[in-house]
Length: 262
Ligand code: SF4
Image (cartoon, rainbow, N blue to C red; front, side, top):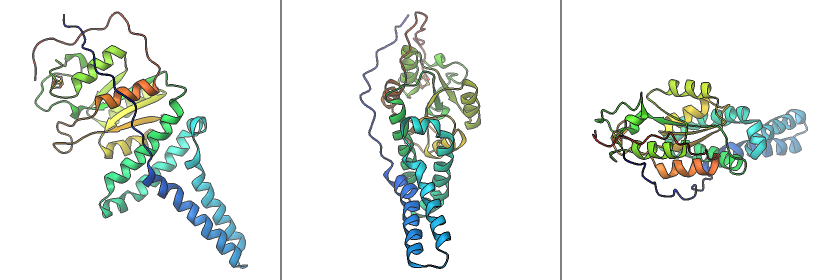
């Protein structure tokens, strides 16, 4: 039987800031609040309404400042509001030709807050969600039914992922439908999701599952959408090592199949 191979150490998680998203998400309401307070100072008529508008705008900006425990406690409300902003400005970003940049910035802002929250007190029950399109299109291995049917031939990232998942006893799902992935996530009730997908599905996932903190990793699409996509397994490993409590290795880990490829 072929033993599991050792994977190279993943290195640190990349630094992410989400500056563009934060500039709009926080900057716009603060600018509106300042404008409302200035209007209140300059116009006696309707001063109360201007003040009310200013306070409302500050209240809209306030969730963007919450970090760590405060973020985890209020995550559903925060993620609902952030998703609203991300989705509301998406058509404009598309029109300007920066749709992916906008969504990735939203994801980076989310990842940064998740890292701040789980970097110290790590998650105990994490779930990895991966899209089926990372499997090479002509591969016949039935990984949707049984991940270990992968032959680890090295032609797509599934082999590295399965090796890492077996070595570290990670819980993960590969799914060909978003709604199946959301349902499985809700059923498993993780305290953290680490999800890999295209930008469109990452935004959708963060919007649909605001109650579960999620660290998201974008796919690389060298052949276009949904075909032979790729992602950084070391990035996934770094996220799991940094944000999730390690699980003790067990003795029943099964090696991958030795022969036969796509
Ligand atoms: S057998 Fe090869 S091509 Fe098929 S899923 Fe595994 S690593 Fe990918």
